[in-house]
Figure 1 (tube, rainbow, N blue to C red):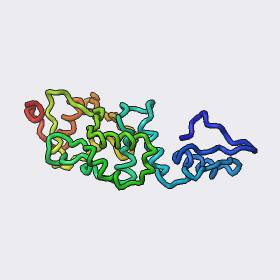
Figure 2 (cartoon, rainbow, N blue to C red):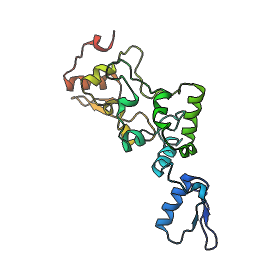
Figure 3 (cartoon, helix red, strand yellow):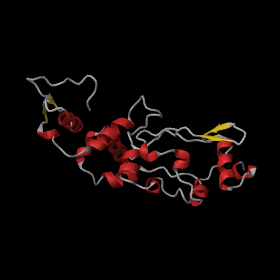
Figure 4 (cartoon, rainbow, N blue to C red):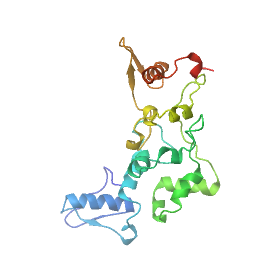
Length: 218
């Protein structure tokens, strides 16, 4: 990808792409600036990985963006947003299990084995293939977590029609997942933040769900 230190083309020299992703960015820059000279070697003059895949991969691995770095630069925006993959395709059985399903490497490779080998340019795809070949699970960094004394059942919420985004935020818009902010206000003006007890109770009150202590603490 192009960075702040990328040399600019002069009248006598062209900027040479060193990857397919960089070739996409050079073309985009040349389209805006007709004086910007570029050179795309044949090996990088490819359609895949797509520019969107390159950009989302880079954004998912941005150390300065909110949220923890994951073992694989996985972009929810690219998968759930651009390709509109249903949440439960990857997080299977969430509607019938108390816990949300975490996608196995087999689920990921079920799609990616059908993709062009050119996508291996992306480090995240290389890491995924390494896990597949070594039969190792992906150790994702957990983002959403309630205390151990709270029994949150995904199936009850999914069956009640609660959207995933209610608790997890607009994942289809996020390259790098993190705990998005949300505040619910009580009638007397006191705030409660996402996943705090008051935040959950306020939602239960609004939706007419049980507020009995044993609903969540048992």
